[in-house]
Structure formats: structure tokens, C-alpha cells
Amino acid sequence: MSQVIAVIDFGSQYTQVIARRIRECQVFSKIYHHTTKAEQLRADGVIGVILSGGPSSVFAKGAPRPDPALFELGVPVLGICYGIQLMGHLLGGKVSRSTHREYGHGVLKIGKPGRLFAGLPKSLRVWNSHGDRLIELPPGFRAIGTTENSEFAAIEDIKRNFYGIQFHPEVFHTERGVEVVRNFLVGVCGAKQDWTTKDFIQHSIDTIRATVGKSRVILGLSGGVDSSVAAALIHKAIGRQLTCVFVDNGLLRKGERDYVEKLYAKHFRIDLRVVDASKLFLRRLKGVADPEKKRKVIGNTFVEVFEKSLKSVGHADFLGQGTLYPDVIESVAIGNNPAALIKSHHNVGGLPERMKLKLLEPLRELFKDEVRRVGTALGLPKEVVWRQPFPGPGLGVRVLGAISGDQLEILRNADAILQEEMMESGWYYKVWQSFCVFLPVKSVGVIGDERNYSYVIAIRVVESTDAMTADWTRLPYDLIQKISGRITNEVRGVSRVVFDVSSKPPATIEWE
Image (cartoon, rainbow, N blue to C red; front, side, top):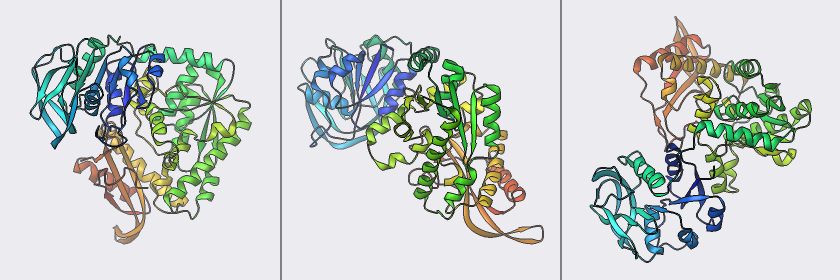
């Protein structure tokens, strides 16, 4: 991976989307904080730079700026939205506050296609989101595209290979935006489209073997996509030197433990140790109703159980984790923000320092969609690779309030029916998440001729691409009716089923 396209982050909500679009063009991208020095980019083999958008104005006090030496690296630069304004401001042009913020669709008229717009029509519907605009070009630049509100909506400096666009090509709202990105990568930067799943797997195997040598690796296997793909990749590289530990915390979905044992121990022949700590978790959770307290109890207990499991494994030098690129970016952006600790135990957070293990994170350069492709190439079944996200604290945050074993059993049985019907109807793989929530309130119902005073189950089904925003899914009424009927008839302890029609924001996906 000697070729790198650097995405300089100025706080845009679309920064990760830019990096993903570059990867979709089979070119490796990496996100850098705006304070990164130009020499670091040179050392990393950067062949092109993209300046992201951002919420700031170039006139704002403390507005983020890049290392000025970035423009002297001798590599192509593309400024997007805030990036074009910043480029214009720093290179001798003039930026002005717009009389009104330009947000939403606009029409880009392309005057000179050049390399950036090669093969594209003369008019494109594009997505804008900006309050400032360039009103005077820096020396060496010329305008190559205009919109109704900006005569410098697209600019270029052919000699230095500097480009700027006022719109966002990375979002789906922009017509043929990925082609604009590809033109910059291939046509301008000369990037080779060699970032493939096959190459990544082979590169990772070689790296894992060189890093680990003859040492042992321990990995906390949850059964989710990330830890499963990490386990499969590490196992392919070092075989029996990997030991996976699966902790049954009593907060798992129905049949989860048996499924994990059969798949990994029997099918993939991975050295899997199962630790049943369900009684310990439930005992410590007794009477704990606050969501954050529950998460902390679950996380701390997980760390303790995982730490003790090392005694049965023997000496290990490395801790394998399914850390993904968004996790890496988030940790850099958030720093020491305690909120980042909420899901830490899901990836065995905090263990390396306490257990003096070196980290092995083979997926830390990948986005979720890339992880799924790697998992498929490694032979993991579809039901694992395309499994819906499951919270680290498990059903502990899907039983509202204090938790009891009886409530967990009701929730497990109801959720199993929901998943079965989602699979049977073909809807499971069409949505981001579908799950049941146990509500600690009772409602009157009727079973036969008898009064039934029992609990309420809420069904939550959402569509999303990254969990940052989500919309509730409009399932067919017949399917909702079937799911509701089965739960109230088959799950003892449930008298009523409700369907959650809240979007994120303002609601969150999980209820706790």
C-alpha cells in the first residue's frame, strides 16, 4: 500500500464519506487531522490530497487550517466546499460571506471539462452546503464550472494540479459525483486502482505472521461481524496460535452460544474457549436500573472475566481486536471524552494496558462494507457477514430498567420470533437493525376467555447506512400483524406489542 490519498479533516460530517468513496474506486485513502505536518504526508507516500468540507468559516477565529507546506508537496490537491474556500484564502484569492446560505441541490454548469470533469455532461445536479464563497481567484487559477450563486463553483490550476469545487461530490445527492472523485484520483493523481479485497487479505496475512512470529494471540469473540472477521483473518494467518474467548454474559440472543460454538469451533476449527459467566453478570446487575450504570457494570465485569480466562489459555503476547477505521478516527477526534468508553468493552477496551498485551488490529484500516467483503472472501457465512449490529452490553440495554432473568427470557423469545419472520420475509438483509425491547410496564390483554395482565414488547426496525442517522422502516402491515400475533400468542408474559416509529434524530436507535 505505497499509494495513499490523504483526506485532510476540517470537521465535515462527510469526511468519512469522502474516504469511503475513494476506497470504492479501489484506491487506498487515509484521514488525517488538519494539524498533520506536510512531512508526515510525504513520509506516508501520499500521492494526492483532498481538503474536506467543514462547518467553519475561513473568517472565524480559530478556523482550522492545514500546514501551508502541504501546497509545496508537489502532489495534486482537491478542495471541497470549505476546502476550496480555504485554498482560495491561503493562496491569494478572496472569499466572501454569501448573502444567503446555499444548501441543497444546485445545477453546476461545466465550462471547461479538463481532467476533473472528463467524460461528464455539461450540466450536473450537485449538492451544496456552504455559507461562504470564492469571489476572486488566486493567481494561476481559472474557473471551469459555475452555479447560479457562484461563478467560481469549480476551479483549477493546471500547472500545480490544484482543483477546487464548491459542491460535495461524495454524497449520493450529487449526480455522478463518484466519477468526479475517480477523475481526480486516476486522471489527475495517476493512482492505480489496486486496493482490492484479495490484496488486502494477502497483505494482512503477511503482516500478521511477521508481527506475531511464534507468539500466541487471544481474541474476545462476540459473534458479531467485526470480531468474527478479525478472528477468521488472524486464524488464516497463524492457525492454532490464536485462541478465541467467548463470554456468555447471560445477555445473549436465543441460541447464540450454541451457534458460535458450532460455527467457530467445529466448522473453522478455531481454538475456542467458552466462559459461562451469566450468573455473575446477572447478580451484579440486580437492581441496577440506570442505563449508564448498567453499561459500566457489564463492561467492568467483562474485563474481569476476560482477564481471568487468560489463566486457562496460558501465556499470550497479543490481543486481537476487531477495531475498524471509524473507531480509530472517532478515538482521535474524541480523545479522552468519557462518552467514548460506552462501547469500549465490546472491543475489550482497557485490556491491553492492564494485561500488558500488544494490540493486533488487522481491520483498523477498513470501513464496515470492506470488512463484510473480507469476511465473504474468507468463507464466513452470509448470516455472519451481513449480521445486523448488536450492542456490546447485549440485551442488557434492551430490557428497560432493572434486569431479571424472567424478563430476559421473555425478550429472547420475542426477539427470536421477530428475527425468524424478518428472515422468512426477506426483510432482514434490507434493514440496518431489527430488534425487540422489553418495556417494564404491564397492560391488560385477553387470551381465550381469560384476562391477561402482562408486559409490553416494542419492535424497533430502522434503515441506516452508518448509524449516525436512521429512519424507521415501513414494514408491510401484514408482516407487522404476523409478528405481533406470534409474539402475543407464543410468548408467555406478553399481552401487547407496539411498533416504534421514531427516527434518529431525535430518538436514538437503541432505547437505552
